[in-house]
Amino acid sequence: MQGAMAAASVAPVTRQISGRAPPAPVPDPTGPESGQSLAAAVADLTVLDASGRRVLFGALFRERRAVVVFVRHFLCYICKEYVEDLAKIPKSFLQEANVTLIVIGQSSYHHIEPFCKLTGYSHEIYVDPEREIYKRLGMKRGEETTSSGQSPHIKSNILSGSIRSLWRAVTGPLFDFQGDPAQQGGTLILGPGNNIHFIHCDRNRLDHKPINSVLQLVGVQHVDFTSRPSVIHV
Image 1 (cartoon, helix red, strand yellow):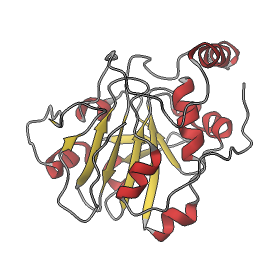
Image 2 (image 1 turned 90 degrees about the vertical axis):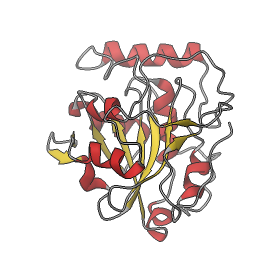
Image 3 (image 1 turned 90 degrees about the horizontal axis):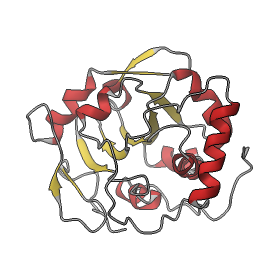
Image 4 (image 1 turned 135 degrees about the horizontal axis):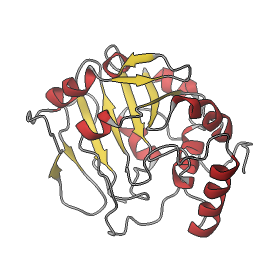
């Protein structure tokens, strides 16, 4: 997958690069076209932490740079395996670059803790159950059939991955999809302040950005994702 490479020190990036598609303006339902205006449009919206406490989304990147990854839903096996690789990023690497890593889901907050245990993820994570931030950022609902190539982060095939997702759904305490199955995710680099330096809106479930390409943009060391930590597979 080819992507946009830009240093965090340059002016905010307000275009998305997705696969082989040509650059296109970032969807902005609120009207303003600058990255700063787009970030300001979502800064006052809230997310929930694992205890159900409301947190201003803008507070997450007001004083620091943040890589923010929006996932489809917590039952998605592709999201699960992608977040398993996000979990491998050492906190020391992020601290050296003065960057924080944040995952945003769109389920009930009750699903955060089980999802973290499942994936081994220990960085920051929140949920946007009403998908207000997803919508405001123009993230796609539904899938484009364009091929996104092979992801270095996905290990399961569609059959085994789907069976595991269904099993987790029917054996969980609440039988739900832990989010809207049609919602796609994306990746942003935000802050400090209301600045968007990079945005990528996924066109389909496999169109996420390779993690090291995003880390390179914020000056974080390359991570070897070939070693797999011990996580619970169900």
